[in-house]
Image 1: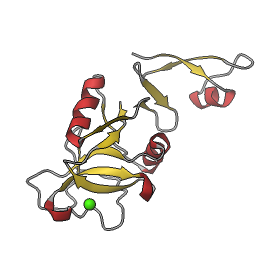
Image 2 (image 1 turned 90 degrees about the horizontal axis):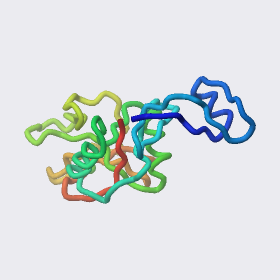
Image 3 (image 1 turned 90 degrees about the vertical axis):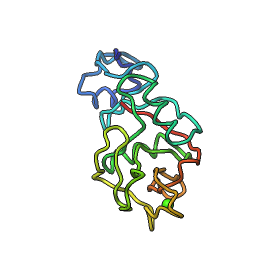
Length: 165
Ligand SMILES: [Ca+2]
């Protein structure tokens, strides 16, 4: 897991805190703690999957991320910067995020991280969300059409997804 990072430009090496030593393309000699098929995000210091997977149901997305690599999970934006990075990676694609409401819960705002079941802190809800429409919406998707604000959705919908470590 991990390895040397091939940097494309001086600025990128600078962001890693190492000095650029060559003209043009070169190797930063910085250790990046990401496994194969994941890339290091210098802004939030997380590994994100290079691929946008799916489309899949939310629960399958959770399982697929877990099976990708030990410690990998469905993306969980935990602050505004991480939600911005999600938007950049997703492009114009709606993506599942690792948030859910427990089936026994009657509290709309009882939303938890799928990786550890803890209540979420940072939120980025779209207008009127979460609304648990028809009592059927217990998982969460970030919508490109809403600037990647979050919407609770049904578990039968399918969507693309990004994994993180
Ligand atoms: Ca909703």
